[in-house]
Length: 126
Image (cartoon, rainbow, N blue to C red; front, top):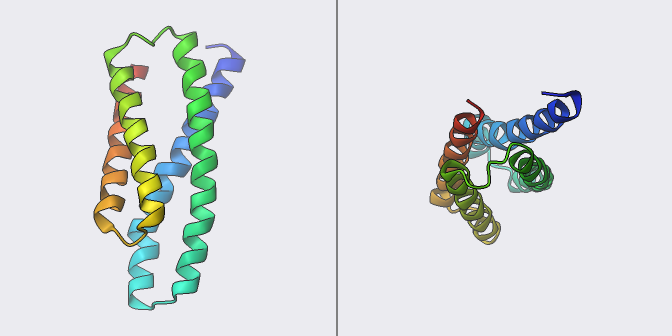
């Protein structure tokens, strides 16, 4: 992999780490602490900040993912098609979650779908 494509892959993985890693931190650390010591304004601020970062990460993921799919000629891959379908579903659920921030089933679905997308990305890389 040349330096330019290595940078594209690096940005893709960094954005993925922020998006999925952030979900892990929020679920494992922020929500339990907030539940035991509720401060709604603080939680809203954390959610807004993470939301902005996640939106930026999703844009980076889409741009770098499309570039790599083109460069590696993966558009006909069934694995990529499944991954893209799940990305569309993830974006849709995320938009719904914006209007229903306390819907824990949405949070769980977004997280599980994110993990499946990461798995499919690993499968594409091997």
